[in-house]
Length: 176
Ligand SMILES: [Zn+2]
Image (tube, rainbow, N blue to C red; front, top):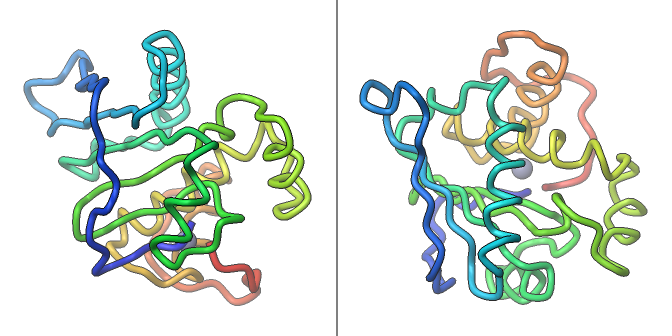
């Protein structure tokens, strides 16, 4: 879940684009949801719907224009390695482009990969999406690469608080 401030887009995002359809769409900036290549329409719609539900309590509209991209687990590691990112991470944010990328395994069980994520993060799989989203929202809302600030922001969000963009004291050493 490391963020890249100056990353250049190397993923070809094509195909299924579902734009935000919230009730107040005309007054809130647009959130865009995209499935990368390899997704079936059914899986794309299902996972985007799960993503929107998971984001709702955290008011993603505060980000303004933002794009959320789902990537199949089969393609995930290649994407991360090509950007020099840690492939154990199931999410990352490109601040400059206002994009957050999320791995399929955050939404469905993926053979081998789900077990791998569980081992690395020690977060139950049904909590991993929430964990990843709150952390990435830390990068996005604070507009910062700093992992400690994103971690601290994310954990406060998960506790139902209204966080500030400040670094905590006892942060994990894992970069994500
Ligand atoms: Zn991070």
